[in-house]
Image (cartoon, rainbow, N blue to C red):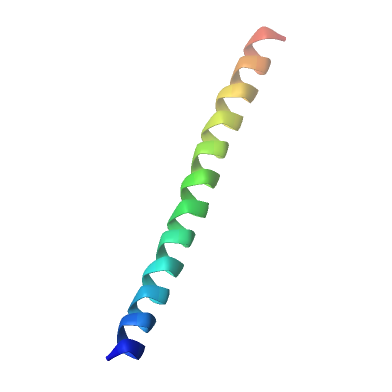
Amino acid sequence: MDFVVNFKFKKFSAYAVGFLIFDMLFVNLHIWLEWTKAVFVSS
């Protein structure tokens, strides 16, 4: 029983970490796009 709970928790944390990384990349991409747009417009 403990093994199953541990396995599920590990699976969940793997998903959580993956989602966090994806979220950070998405936000960074959005910031980068806004920044390049601003630079392109100002130049």
